[in-house]
Image 1 (cartoon, rainbow, N blue to C red):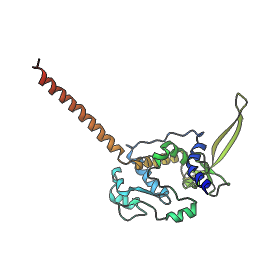
Image 2 (spheres, one colour; image 1 turned 45 degrees about the vertical axis):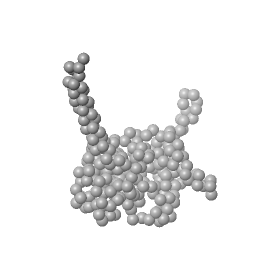
Image 3 (cartoon, rainbow, N blue to C red; image 1 turned 45 degrees about the horizontal axis):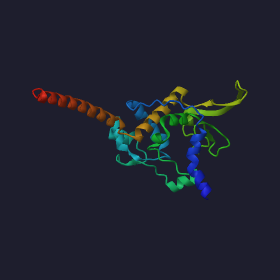
Image 4 (cartoon, helix red, strand yellow; image 1 turned 120 degrees about the vertical axis):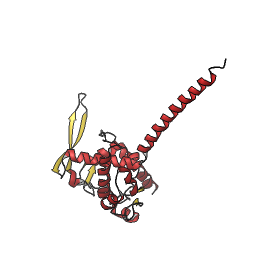
Length: 242
């Protein structure tokens, strides 16, 4: 029993270690891109919020993205009644554990935990794997338990493994993904959708980061002006003192 618990606790670390050889793509994160954040919020509530919660994020924080309460209620609230509620799901933790083996993690700070580049790569590297219970696997997270909920948009990818030999005679395994059945979006369109979703996840992990940065700039300007005024006062006070 203790061994099982230890392996369960080490599972995230082992998953990260096993994906260490994957070159992560750079996520197009831009917290000043309001339209991207709005699109990412829409993708999140339509595809992620069915199983995952964001229990530390309230719907009314979306007003910071330029949305009115009416727009939030009409387009983004499907599992709550009041704008001040948190983004939780109706699915009970006990049921989720029974259906999926473990409860789906809360995504409020997932971008701070995993990193934007990892999430961007993860959302784009699902492939069909008949050996998995869900029928899906992932290059960034081998052995992932989550099915590819965006496959209708991206399409169905399969894993292609090639064995080559380098200049020193060592065997090198190359793993790549091949799009066998296109989805409703082109590759460029799906990459943009994944980028918008990651952009929103980064924003959700720290919604006040942009405003805090602006306040910090104002504070620094105030200090510079205050220091200049102090220096001028000192100079005027001591000019006749010998």
